[in-house]
Length: 369
Ligand SMILES: [Mg+2]
Image (cartoon, rainbow, N blue to C red; front, side):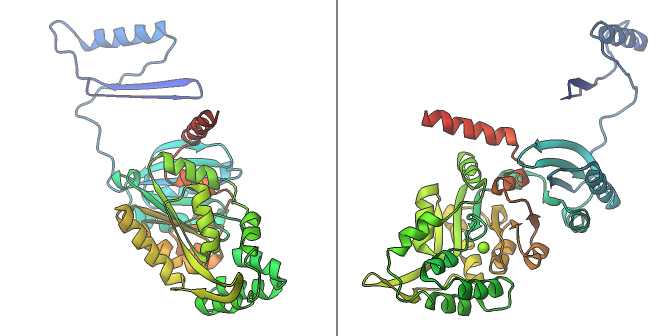
C-alpha cells in the first residue's frame, strides 16, 4: 500500500488506494482485478481499477486557502469564485464546508498559484459578486497564528464609545459629525479626539459606569474570544476610545491586552482632556507590535481586526488584517474583509469550523452547569 485516501460526503464514500502490483508467486493482474470487483460487489460499491507507474504527481507549488462567506452563498457566486481561481492558473484540490451558520462558509484548498496574485484576482471577483473572500497561504504559519488584536468601537462593540459619552452630555450631534469625518480619513485623528473630548468637559465621572452599561457587544464577539482562548490564542484590544471602557471589557471578556486613551478625571469631573500618549493610527500599529513582543508571537502570526481608517496601519502590520464591516477605503487596503455583522465569522478565516466552535461552546456550558 503506497497511499490511501477516503472521503465521506452526503452518505457517499469514496475510497482510493494506490498499491503496488502483487509480488507473490502466481498472482496476476487479472486475479487482483477479480478480487477487488467481487469485494466491491458484495458491499454494493462501484470499483474502478487504473494501472500505471509511479506515485501521485506532486501538487503544484503555492498553496492557499480561500474562504468564501456568503449569506446565502449562491451557486452563481460559487461558480464565479471557482472560475476566478482557474483564471489565475490555480487548481482547486479540495472544497470543504466550514460552517452553515450564521453564514455559509466554504473553504477551497488551492495549489499551483502564489497567494498574492490569487488574493488580487479574488478581491476583484468578490467585490463584483458581493461575497466575502479571504485568501491566506497554507502551511504551518496558518496553524501557528497565536495573537488576535481587535479595534473596539464598531468592531468588538457595536457602538462608538465617545458617542455614548456624548449622549449623556447632550452633544451627540457635534461629536458624531467629527467622528464620521475622522473615520473617513478627512481629519487628523488626534486633533479630532481632542475636539470631541473637549465637548465632554464638566461631565460627572459617574457617567463612566453608565457608558459601560450602554456598551453592546458585536454579535459573535464572545464566541470569537472564547474559542480563540480555548485554542491557546492571546487576544487583545486597542482603541482610540478610552481605558475607562476598555479596562472593563478586558476584565469582562478575559482579554490578555488592552490599550486606549485615558479620560482625565479631576475631583470627580471629566476635564475634557486625555492624559498620556494618544492612541492614534500609528499608535495602534505600535501597540500591536508591543503586544506581539510581550506574547512572544512573531508579527507574521498575528491577526488584526478593525473597521476604521485609524486601523489601517495595524491591519497592514499584522500577518492577517481583517477589515470588519469597514469603510470602503479600509476594505480596499486590508488583506481581507468581512462584511457580515458577526464577529465569530473571523474564526472561519483561520480555518476553524463551526463544529469546532460549537464544541468549545458546549464545553463552556457544561462547565457552567
Ligand atoms: Mg472602530
